[in-house]
Image 1 (cartoon, one colour):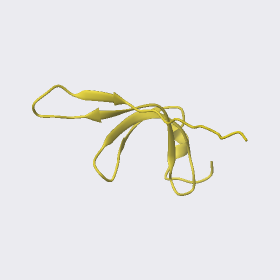
Image 2 (cartoon, rainbow, N blue to C red):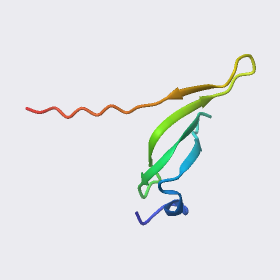
Image 3 (cartoon, rainbow, N blue to C red):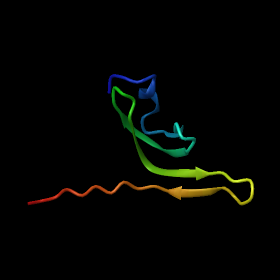
Length: 68
């Protein structure tokens, strides 16, 4: 992994990411590419509310390879 703004030192550490639409995703940084796309493990979204307790939504990516 040769690119990114100092992300090499954060690999295998828990990070918090604020997306462009304001979502807060927390997970373990596993990798990234030259465009700074990231791969997170054990990721979850933190949802904050003024009326209820903070919610934690666990996220998963399901990959299915079609075998023919």
